[in-house]
Amino acid sequence: MYKKILLAADGSDHATRAAHHAAHLATIEPDATITIVYVVDPASSKHDVIAEGRSSTYLEELRHERVRPVEEIVEQKGVSFDYKLLKGEPGPEIVHYANDEQYDVVVMGSRGLNTFQEVVLGSVSHKVAHGAKCPVMIVK
Image (cartoon, rainbow, N blue to C red; front, top):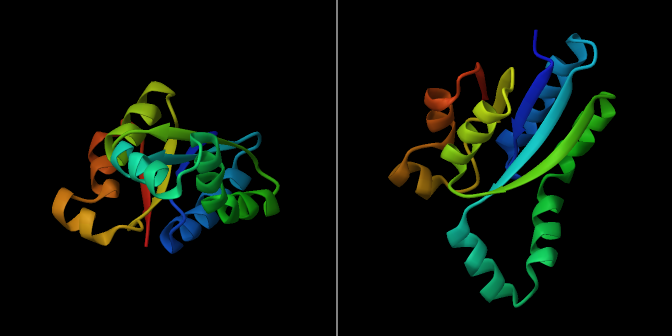
């Protein structure tokens, strides 16, 4: 049913809980795979480079560290996965990627790390639920 699973991760507790659900879904279907996607907003990306004074490669490694707990959850279930770093506004970027790559389901947390932005701009999960062509599982 769900062989190709897209798991949106941002380092939040909600994303960690979503990882448990995605890993469980993947164990139901033989040969299911998970792509863990982390989206960097260009505005915060530029701020990170200035604030850290480091290379973009170093910052990408730091961002990847934020999703390591999610990778560990998936690994513990014995599920095949890969990691993808995207750049852009998280909601539309996840929708675009999920639709272009024809995922069977998107799994994500109901809240991310930046509650203020969600209140002002609308939640990422709301944008994905309305824009994705596949089912979207939003985990509290």
